[in-house]
Every structure is written in structure tokens, then in C-alpha cells.
Image (cartoon, rainbow, N blue to C red; front, side, top):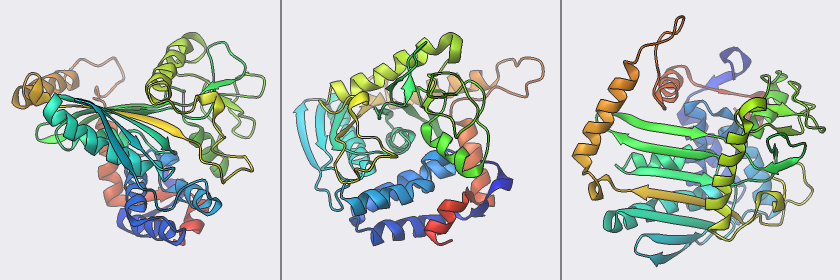
Length: 345
């Protein structure tokens, strides 16, 4: 979203408004705080498609009964370093943050904590949960599968979801190293956002109902996998990785079997989404101090690498996000008109 496209609001105001709307919709304090935290993370790092604009959707699902307003999370430890979290069909952010906490508890003892989540729902930006682990000193991976909206390489029908893969690691005296990427070229929420703003899509990211590439968000019926026409097999394969961890290991819903997140008449049936979180304790490997030294050395070398003609600098994963956070802390967060109206801004 460009700065000129929308009004901007302080994060504190958005946090208050989002929490209030979720509370009005009947969400429990624990679940609404988790959802607000995750949406604010996305809005602050510039992932507006998964930010505060999703508040209205979640409120509709709470009202319709698809989302349990007062979920009672259940944790079952399955091994020295593994556990399952039952999300009780509540807001997915609540179960996902709990899974990170459980993963940390396991990793402190076993070195790794692998936590599957079932009976959950949409969790927003997967990077919020990878970051939550890294901020406490742990290398963290988070993923989920979603309903089919991405064609396969050379395909002409939806098969995988956007299926994000997120990784984060602590960095001494600095913000975490952070990767949060959809395995599609863009998330479907970006298409919906562009529709709301009346903007064309970039080339090579979406396709019409025949599987042909389009830049018109109103004609976009599916997304293209990461890598585009020539290398989309890589994105399609990575989408399968997310499905393996999130659905197959947790026994939940395959991408093609999901009730659609948007556009369907059914807003009362839970979707039984699966997620997966892996937490690693550096102390149980090379040691936290040495790991921190190696991260610093690695990132210093990366940022000092030579640049191609015309480029200014090499950026490490997360650098762009932290610059966006700093800018939005000062300038405010842009909010699209529909969300502005819904939140009563």
C-alpha cells in the first residue's frame, strides 16, 4: 500500500480499535489479544494484507459461529520434544502463540520443540510466530497450509494454498533475522487489497479462470506459485512442504478440502486448520553466545557484500521489515478505506 492511498493511524490507536471490535464480537480476552498482536505485527512490518484489515473478517466468522468465541486450548505432549495443541476452533493466532510457548518449554529441555496444531483457523502472518520465538532467544520456524488458491506449475486449477514458510533467529544487539514468505507469488489477501484500492497487480503473480496470467485483480481467480512461469515448480514444491508439516503431520485438512476462507455462504462450520511450529534452543547446539557471534559475523558479511551496478546495498532478511516498522512508528500505519470505516477511525 502506498502512503498516498490511505490515511495513517498510530499503532496504539489501531490496537485499541481492533481489540474493541473483536471484543464486541464476543471473542475472549486471551484470543482477541493474540489476534490483535498478530495483526498489528503484520501491519507494522508492511504486510498489510494480513494486518488490521482482517478484523472485519474475523468478526464475521465469530458472529457466524465458525470461530469459537471462548476456545479452551488443550496441550498434549507426545514426546520429549513434541506436542500437539488443540485450538478448539478459536482464532488461530491464539493457538499459534501458545504453540510457540510450548515449543520453547520443550526446547529448553530437549533442544528442539516441534508442535503441531489442529482444530485451528486462519492465523494471519506466520512471521508473527517465528518472531515470537526469536525474541525470546530461539530459532523458530512456523508454517500453515491454507485453502486452494494457487495453481501448480503449468497447472490450470487451484491446488495448494499460499502456504507460508516463516523463519526467525535472534541477533545480538539487534532485531531478529526474519524470513516470512508465501510459497505463491503473492498472498490472495494482496489481490483483495488491490481490488479494494483499485490497483493493478504486478505481472506474473495471478491467473484468470483459465490459468492465464492477468494483472487485473477483478479477473484473478488463482495465484501463480513462487518462481513464475519458468521456475514455479520451486514454489509449488515448497507449498507441499507447508502442507506436509501443517496438514499431514497434524491430521488436519488438505488444501483442496478446505471450506474457502472467503466467498462462501457457510460461515458457521469450523475449518480444522493445521499449523506447525518448530523451536530450536541454540544452547543445546553450539551455545547461545557462539551462535550469536556467528549470526553477527554472517550478517555483517552479508550486508557488506558487493552490489551490482545501480543497486544501493544488500539487505538481510528482515532489514526491510524493520525499516518499515521504524517508519510506521513515526508516520503511522496506512489503513484502507473499508477497514477505516469498520474500525470507526
